[in-house]
Length: 326
Image 1 (cartoon, rainbow, N blue to C red):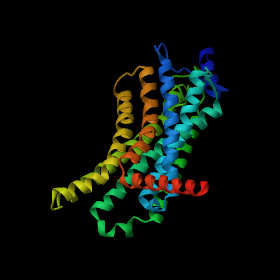
Image 2: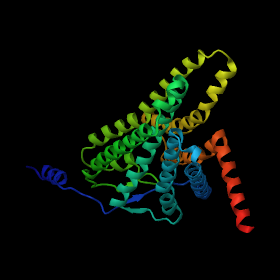
Image 3: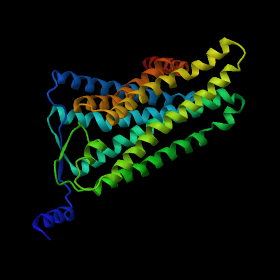
Image 4: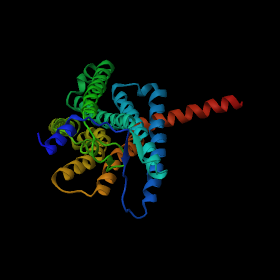
């Protein structure tokens, strides 16, 4: 065996697990501090908005329905997803703490991906709720029950915890003997596994699987439900009834557009063409941040039931405060 072959053999036989990764963040971006201000403001609004929506659903008994179980789950995952991502990103960028311990990097990756995945399939569950409500209105209360919705949501949680545990295992088996600079502002899956110096074919397979399971399948299922809803609405006699039925879907359609279009666009662009790291970082972070920011606003302002419940809650608090003062 020649010295060169021996060196390659030793390199392949050596398993290197780094102590830390370095998050490169942005490079040469003017006025980047405004982006930090946006992240901080977005997080505060996300926490307040989703916290308020969760409290309203919890406190108002008329909202203890299967539909609002789904909304509660979405608000909860939005809140947890933003909390998993934004504080760490701000700590990295604002305080320039760019080194992240290997184990912390993997756990951070797990939770960010978990909450995004559950958000995606929660939107599918919402589509199912609207599909049954419009296509089978007389059987809605017998089909869409609290145990059924609870079972669907628990299955989504269990499935993605298991799937993402496999994703993290696929990172653990990698050896990092070259650069440890992650070209992102957080431990994203692809930027981390692309640094490995051994075979990453399994990681690429998991990345494509995640793309299909988290983005493509949910989008196809939601599209199919709305095709069925459109057919059902076309059979309704009057245009006024048709419009009234469709209005119950508008909030969900807005949420779907806000969530899927940016993240789908970013992933397709990264596969088909070259994207500058700064552009990828901004797009990737916004796809995590904007839906969680806007979801509670949409459900508070666009849903009549929630608006009525908020008014009742405010009225009840006002009466309670008046009674205490008296």
